[in-house]
Amino acid sequence: MKRFMLVLTGLVAVALLSGVAMADKGKDSKYSTEEIMKKAMKGGLITKVAKGQASKADQELVIEMLDSLVKNPPHKGSEESWKEKTTALLDAAKQTVEGKEGAAAKLGKAVNCKACHNVHK
Image (cartoon, rainbow, N blue to C red):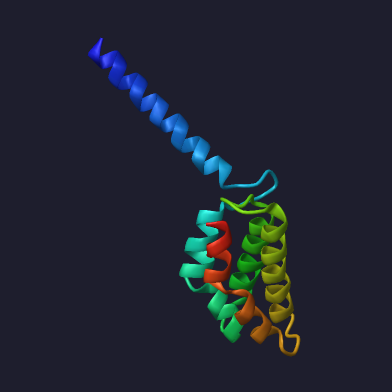
């Protein structure tokens, strides 16, 4: 009986953790918000893109991740605000990669962690 309860508890824990991970990822999204924050934001890829120091592969990865971020649901706050902030970030990154004048500054402004975290984290 003890073994059964231990196994059952483990299965429930795995199911709950899987559900939390899935909730972090939108229907058509390739990356979870957590993955994007770790790799693109904290990992510094977005900074490399803004400074023009990212390789073509890194630029493409950042665009792909930010596209996923737009598709992911917010942890809290309104969907409208989430879409507005994440879309602005994606657009600024795309313009920076395309080399448009003033886009790097726009990207730097869009990468305002606190503005987004205060509302959505």
